[in-house]
View 1 (cartoon, rainbow, N blue to C red):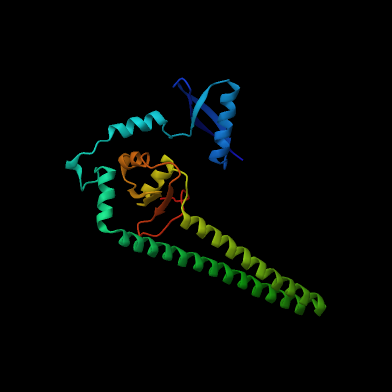
View 2: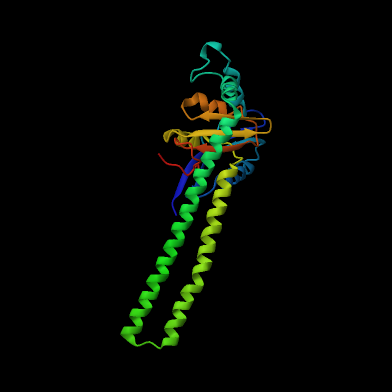
Length: 249
């Protein structure tokens, strides 16, 4: 397994920011990588306040960016309009319209998932028929005892329901996770990947929700205004829910 090097930043209690070049195995999760950087900082006996992944802004940087953004009425109804204006604009369009659009998007995603599960079922059936044909061929060529060949076919038939059950359960679990959104704030790399395919972020928190297009740095800074613990969804250009950050342009 190949290793990769990443530069993580550590913000100390004094406000000083230090960089750590750390080597990680390919496929290591962000949580595992973060724990590794914590261990490196602990070895240096540093008073750590924040651990930042590559590209992740510090709290001070986010606060400075938020303070920089001002509501300019002349920018209303443009891509540079303040997020509060867009929230009012979306409210004016009607919440019922948004709910209907979201429901239609979720329905399309559900139908796609069902089609995937049915395709996996058909593939399993095709494999079973192929196995039966192979057993028949072997029986004719080698004059195998009938009891032995019947046992082989029965074994394949017994395996099929279990395989279909696993496929359905895995597909249903993935669909539930997709529809319920995620509570982790998107990273810059995920945001850029969504921008490359023209996707849109939808976020909801107690007492409010918003839609954030993925075009340029302005919308990345808008993400910082969303409260912690909010739920995030990603919509493709056709409005259907998409899995992320597994998206590629």
